[in-house]
Image 1 (cartoon, rainbow, N blue to C red):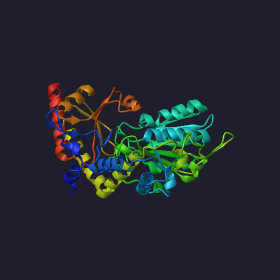
Image 2 (cartoon, rainbow, N blue to C red):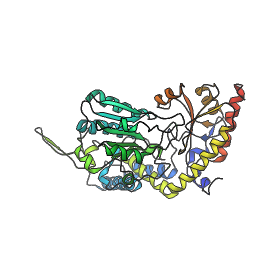
Image 3 (cartoon, rainbow, N blue to C red):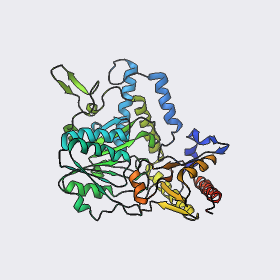
Image 4 (cartoon, rainbow, N blue to C red):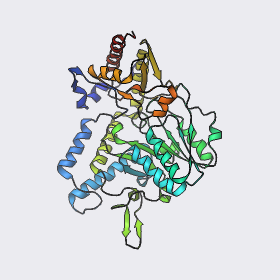
Length: 410
């Protein structure tokens, strides 16, 4: 039974949901790739572009101060949202990928040497694999992998063997972008810390669905993207413990990240600006702050309950479809439904659903090792947001049945 949730009121804030696709009402089930934006975020960004646009942290005039204040207000909104200790621990980037690359370069430069080990899980997004591989190649370090079971849960039976004093960093997704698995990150952080390793948590698929408290988790780094939490593209967040960030060198040089520049020697700025070289996407940052304010106005705990109920409803309906193979059946799971329908190619299924106005993701989902685990070339993924409804789930399942009948599966 669905919990009480003002989803119609929420949907009214997202104009794109009124769009028609091939004459059909849009059923948007691709929020895992990018969420839609409420009009409040769009209007806030337009307001600053139209009335206040000016570079931040540099000017003494009214417009610059206006944008600077809004930019730093957004930093405080992010700090409060993930319960960081200080705004100095909140670094704005272009997104999750850049945040991870920043850590791989800066933390890697300071703390990773030949023979050291980095551990990731088998279910990671490419963005939490490739930067560590590149770091290992540069430093002569070794990448090791925590496998997962066929139901989508991590296999921690060999963790004590993997986590040795050689391990300097563990990278783990809070929520898998393919399987929807909510990983036991607090347990993993504790076990990694026990051997002296630091932990980076990829929160790109978590912060829009479940409350996050970085201090309670005790993670060393936490990363996420604005465009997956109803904010703009091109902006993201790196949280890092202040003490650790202070020990890491900058990874890009330029304006803002410096204190003094001499040809003999340059000294670097304090946190967080040490890691924010050049002109940032300051209006994007303002948009991110507005998106988080919007999520807070709805309530993350309420969103989590509603989406959990909607996910359970969707899974029940999908399991009833002949030929359905679900990937990711963890006991603790968030708003992702990845599947195959009989032997229908994932692209064929996605194209046919699109003709019905239903937007889903198909392919390797930026997680090729997961595809290899299941022996498939790709999957279809439906990912839910707080604006989706049981009626849309019904339309989606009706669409799947039509696809199945067309291919003789049903």
